[in-house]
Image 1: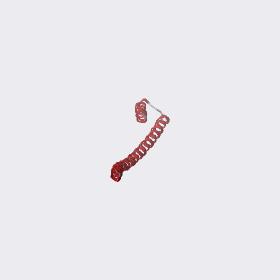
Image 2: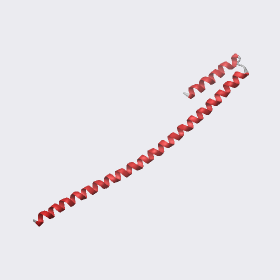
Image 3: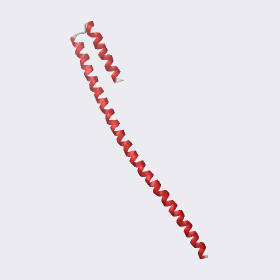
Image 4: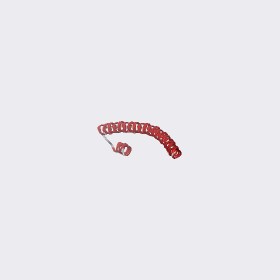
Length: 97
């Protein structure tokens, strides 16, 4: 949207120039274009910052997902070992009788 406004003002400047804009109007347009360029640079910087932050968060999510997968694998192994020990205990109790 800001890019569109910038182009519109630049087009107005080019169209109005040959028509006979006064020096004051030209300076106002130049000032406005300069301000819009600054706004655009600020918006781009914010977008870059947000992109960087999003990339960092994606990396963190990947790390946490890896840790969760490792814990889930460990849990599955422990459950299998628990079930085996329960079976062994039940078998040992049957032998005692």
